[in-house]
Structure formats: structure tokens, C-alpha cells
Image (cartoon, rainbow, N blue to C red):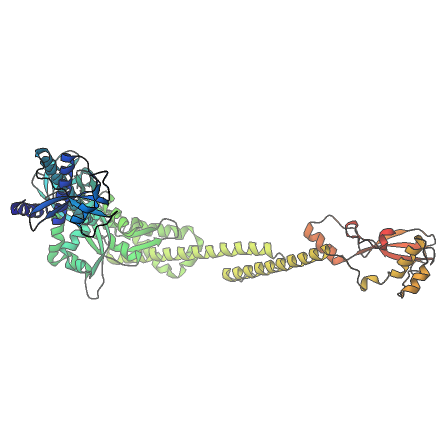
Length: 589
């Protein structure tokens, strides 16, 4: 290894525009590959190139052991300490195994590896360089032309201009210099595949940035671009700084700036218009160079449509060749544009007034203008209109359009009010809302009624849940329910039945006041038993919630009257449901 080799490395780095580290890494890999080609596969092989001494060394990593069993992987402890004095058993040391001669085959292998690694590094470098330039303009020379694409030479790499990305009006020749927009960069085994375009709308944006300093510096902003490559383009620009004319900045003195872009695009016409946040103004500007009299927006539907009225003599200019001007304006503004002449629009407006009575009442104040418009259309039929006559017709068209919008708004409000009234009649049948209320008041009223209904249903559900929980608990007789019940009487009856002495029981515990029903049952002569429903009628078949309410409202308790022979009177006895009886004396009875 001598200094000439180091100079060759520096030359390769300069010619291929590669970092020196990449070339040195390729040389290290080539040395390792040449060693393994000459001496067989050996694990842990590394190469180092010393640029100061111009020497190359091959090292093998071996494990320090006391007794060597595999010379390619292990090294004795004594020998390892000659290389590294503080080496210990189990440690890995690098051993210099540089051969004196690699041989012809190994040297050829090293050469091939170096060239391959350098080519791969060069491809990666080119890919990253042009991947960062995606979305920019590059300069190239036409290298080859075929039916499907044009190949451009960009220096160290080639770019492809597909047929779909070529301007239809252009013809290319070998050696011609072109500007193209980098639309895509792909990584392939043969290097980066760069696809460029001449029809992309962003190419016009980049050309404007190159030619107009105000756009490049951010003083003027490009808001929208509509382009039909090779024929015509429209650009909407806006100034971000007060006192700057955006259209004049892009056009330049006597059109110098825009003319250079037109020449670059092979004579493609470029219209620069002022941007406006108002859709009507933007549409009128987008139809330039045609003069616009009225722009009537109809954005109540899903597709935004604008009806544009222009002078009769400029109708073809506004539409453009094969509808090109109107089509580009629609792309620029994102509105569907319907262009009409002033005579046609005024005739339609007058016809609507004659057919619709409500529209006649709405435009009654402008009757003199409507009469004047009729006279103009009758007198000037088939002839050119003056500016004053066009302004009068334009006012009539605008008045009719505004009246139609107002009537449509009133109809919508009436439809909404009727729908709300029908909804209110469903939730509040008793009281119909007054017709004088506005739809907003009716909506507020409906919301209040619905809220009250929801609150009432919530309270009813809570009460029903409470009733169910009470019914499911144990029923304990209260003092109010025992007005006609005598517990000592029940105990006495039980004692008589069981053969005991009821009087002894009475002496054992104090007796409560007995309440009989003799006064109420004097008309009964036979001692027969019967039952009745107290304050309760036969229930009808009702839904669950209604039946629960009916039970709660009636509150009836079922009793039966039993004739006591000993007392000679009827006593009241409450009958319980079979599932809720509680093992008292009533069970025996």
C-alpha cells in the first residue's frame, strides 16, 4: 500500500461525489471478502486501512482460553497476553492475521466488491439527492425520444417524461434543453427512477416563483391555479402586504415576467386574476377577459351553482373556445357556472313576473323599471344594447332574483312553522299554538313541552318503582287498618276451637276495645258468611302501568265478614294473598 492508492481514493470520492467514509467502508468490505475467498470462511474477520502508514491489516476476533481446541476461534492465554498484557480467560481479543499475498483471484474479488459498493453508494446518494428535490423544477437535455416517453439527461442520472405528462402542442428534438417538474422519485435496483412532468399545474407555480420575486418572498400568494396544459391557464393571486398590486407584480412591466413563462410553456396563455373571499367577485374575476354584469349565487343545493349574466356581444368570449374559459373559471372557483346573455336573463325575469302573482306583489315598487325593461327588449330586439340599457336590464334581473330568494325564504319559514305546529299538536293536542308565533318561538315551546313531558314520565316511573317496592315488602297491619279488627276476638275464637278457655286468656293479657258491625248489619238475619270488596270495583283489562295507577288510586282492601255465634254478631276479617300469609291465628281459621 503506498500513497498513490490514497490519492486514488481521494479521486474516486471527488469524481463520484461520495464521502471518504463510504469509499473506505467499501475497501474494508473488499479486503474481508478477498481474505475469505483465499483462506475460506472465517468468523469474526475485520479489516482496517491505516491512511497514515498506507497499510491494510486483517484482524480476527478470538476468545482467550487456557487450552486451545479450535485455532480459528480460540487463542491461548500466554499468546493473548503478548498482544494484550491484561488479557484474561474468556476475553475476546483481535489478532492480526494479515497474509503476505492475497493472490490474483482474491485481488480480483476485492476489485469487484469495491466497484459494486461504490456503485451502490452512488445510487443511494443520487436517490436521496433527487428525493429531496421532488416538487421542484429541474433542467435537462433531451437524450432519446420514443412513442411512449422522452428521456432527459440530468447529468449523472436520467429522468423520464411520459407521454401523458407531455404538453400536446410541443414537439421535442434530441439535444433540446427543457425545464420539467419532478413529480415522483422511485428507488430501483438500477438507480433512482425520476418521473418529470410538463403538464402539472404546480410547474406553473414554480415558474411564477422563479420569475416573480414578490411570490418568492411571500408578499404575493398564489391562491388557486386552473390549467389546461398547452392552451390556457388561470391563476388567482392575493397580496399579503398593503399597497402591493398582485396582478401587476405577476404580469410585470409591459408583461415581461408573464411573457417569459408563456415562452417556456410553448405559447400557453396565462390569465392572472385577483383573488377575493367573496364568491361572486371571484367568479366575475375568473371569467376575465369577459365583462360580467350580474352574478347570482344559488348555494342552497348540494352543488354550488352561479348564474352569470354578461353582455350579448361578450357571451362567446365568456364561454371561450369549446367552453374553455368557463371551464377554467369553474375549476378556479370550485363553482358550477351557468352563463347567460343579458337579453335572455331579462326575458326570463319578465316571464317569471308575468306568471307568478306573489312575485308581482314583491316587485310592485319597481314597476317603472320593469316597464322600461319590457320596452327596451321590444325596441332593441336583434340590435346591440347601449351601456345604459344593459344596466337597466341588469337591475331588473337583480331585483327579480332577490325577490325570488325572499319568497323562497318565506315559504321555507312557513313550511317549518307548519311542521312545528303539527308536531306540537301531537304532543299538546288540547292547546293548539297561536298562528302568530314565529318558528323559533314554536320550536322553543315544543322543546319546553317535551322537557315537561319527560320530567312527568320520570316522576311517574319513580312512583311506580316505590309502589312495587312497598308491595313486595312484608305487610304489617297499622292502626288505621285495624279500625274494625279485634285481635282479642280472634284469640278467643282460636281458644274455643282448640278447646281452651278464652276467659283465662283474657285475664292473662289486657283486651283491646272491640269494634263490631252490628249496627251496619241489622238487616242480615241469617248467619251466613259472605265477602265483599271495600272501595274497589272490578278492574278492567289495562296495561301494566295503568293498572298499577288504578290500584294506587282506588286503594281498596279486601275483607270478609264472619258470624261469631258466641257474640251473636259479625266481625270483619281481612283476607290476605296466599303468598303473603304469615303463620298467625288466621291460618288456623
